[in-house]
Structures are given as C-alpha cells and as structure tokens.
Amino acid sequence: MRLSPLFLLLMSPLAACDGLNPAPPEEECKLSLRSLPGTQWVMLEAMPDGSTRENPRARMRFYQGDEGIKVDYSVGSPYEIHTYDCQVSPREISCAEEPKLVDWCLAFEAHKEGSCSAAKLREVGGSGMDDTEVIVAIREARRQYAEMAERAQENPEVLKRFRDANNFLGNKLQGLLDARVDKRRCRLTVTDNYMTVHNGRKVVDSNPVGTNAFVQDKEHTLLFENCMEGAKFLALDSETPPTDEELKSIDPRRQFTSEDTIYYHYIGFKHIEAEEGCTYSADTWAQWLPKEEGVTLETMDCDFTVPDLDEPEKGRKISRCVNWTASHQWSDTSPLKFVADDETSPRAFFAMTRYKTCGDGEKEKLDTICSAARVMGM
Image (cartoon, rainbow, N blue to C red; front, top):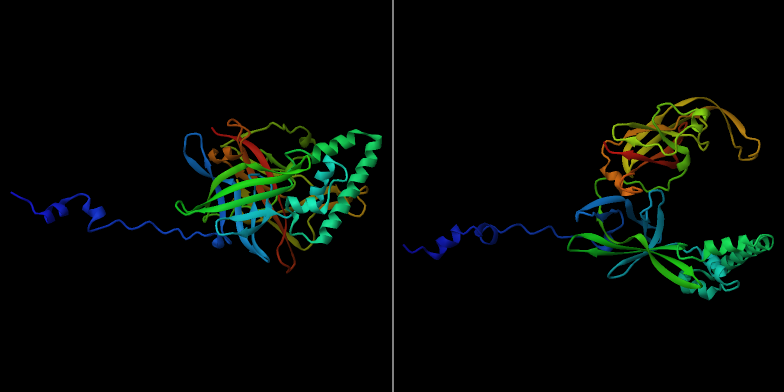
C-alpha cells in the first residue's frame, strides 16, 4: 500500500518540532548598556571540573549618579568596594575611579625628583581635570616629597621605602573597568584592569578577576559596603563576649566546622557606648548575602575607658555599652571556597551593618564591620 505524503508528514517525529507545532522561540535578550543602572552582577567563575558557578566575592552594581552612570565594584576583594564613573560608547561601557592626582604625582617623583608636571598627569588620565586641581595636586605632592626628603637626610632608609611604595607595578593608582553585552548569553563580559605609573610611564595591568563573564543577580540584595574594624570583630565559640584575660589566650589559628555555631563579638571601642534615649540594631550578612535584617541589639552595664576625641591620652569612662554580637552556623561550606587561602582552609565571611536610632529621629547607619573565619566541612 502506498502512503500519501501528507500521512508521512503527520507521522514524522519531527513534525511536532519543525512542522505543525514549532517550539516557542527563546526569550529575546533585552539587556543593553543604557539599561545597566539599577542592576547588580556577580562573576561567573570557571571551576576546575569545567562547570561554572556564581561568585559574589566579585560583584558590581550600576546606578545613575548626578553626572552619569556609576558602578560600585568589589574588584574581587572580600572587604572593599570601589566606585567608578562610567562612559557609554556604542560597543562598551568604560568605567574608572576618580583620579588621585597627588598619588599619581608622587609616583612620578619616586622615579625622578621634579618630574611630575601637569602634562604628565593629563597624559596618564587627568585630561578632564580642572587646571586648579592639577596645580594644587602637584604642590601637595611636592610638599610631601620635601618632608620625606628631609627625614631621609637622617635616615636614608626613608627614601628607599618611599620609592618602593610609589614606584612599583603593584601600586594600583586607578581602577579601570570595561564591560560589553554578550547578547547570545544575555550577560556581561567584564575586563578588570588598573593603572599605575612605573619608572615614569603609565602602565595598565590586569586585576585578579581579569576578563570574565558576569551574570545578573535578581534574587538577592548584595552587600556593597566597605568593611571596617575587621581585627576587632572576632569569631568565637562562646555566646558571651570575651573578658580581657580570655582575649589573651585566643588561638589565632582557631577554626570551626559546619556543625558549630559561631558567635561574632565586637571588642573595639567604636560605637560601643550606649547613648541615653537611643536604640541599636543591625543587618547581618553571610558571604555577602543578607542573613537577618533589623535585629535589635541589647545594651548592658560595662566599665570601659575609651579614647576621648578631644583628649585621647586621657580617655573617658563609660558605664553602658552596646552588645554588638551575632551568631551564624555555616552548615553549607561549599560557597566558602570562594575566598579560600587554599582548598583545605575555606574562609567564611560574616558582616554586620550597624545602626543607631535616637528618640523620634531617623535610623542612622554607623558602619559595617566584618570577620573572616576558617570553617571546615564535616
């Protein structure tokens, strides 16, 4: 029996895909350079086994500033956030940190005394700067150099240290970031560089992130705060803050497991005094992702002497303190390898953003403190 062409077509397994019922088209990528403000991105890290995973250690957020687009970027640092000004061209968005003209000038002077000039500053990236700003920066740099040279007459090592600090390739004088839209994958391709001045010449080199894919994070509110007081925010196994004697015996090599509850205690003096009529709260973050928001902190009786801003040598007694303490259990240690010293020593990054509210006033952000602990899987 001869089958008709129509019957054969209807019976074909390809008909559902290519014929009568075509597959719906993939969603069109609407990403553009102009649409970046209001978005945040994390690095898509390539793993040794060929897979990829999102790494929030390298994260950025774009927003509209008064004079154009800006981006806050971690540069892959667990503790720092850098702000760049951006310019959009047809093919890419180019961003740079604000010029630090004094530092640039010192880099020239470290190579050759008297070599810093307005022309050289403009050549390395200060072309858009006001003439007055350039002149003021050169004068300040020469003043600092003169003070250093005077000290070097008594101790020549001072000059050597100055040159070592200001004339080497790792002296990152300005962060540079370029991003292009990858329409096919609907993500960004980011190139992360920095500018320095070495031996009197401008050099552009790559930061550790290098050129990498970044994907948009629409699910989280990521941490974009510079971290302060890291050495004063301790990860411990005790729920109560340590005494002065206990602080002396804390093992700097201590580590925890995924089954431990870690207690984070602030032992510094900044914002430690509980002011009358004020309440205190905190947001906490684990691996740059939000953990808890608006947690009320207790105040307690204390007997501390804190440095006095007017007379630091005398100090000032306080009797009521804020107990800046939080806890967290790192039950999943796989994300901790993002900031590992090595594969056997993963680091857990915990942060606390501190707030104060006095009377009927508005909630005031004080700062963000952080701690990095070694947490091993079981």
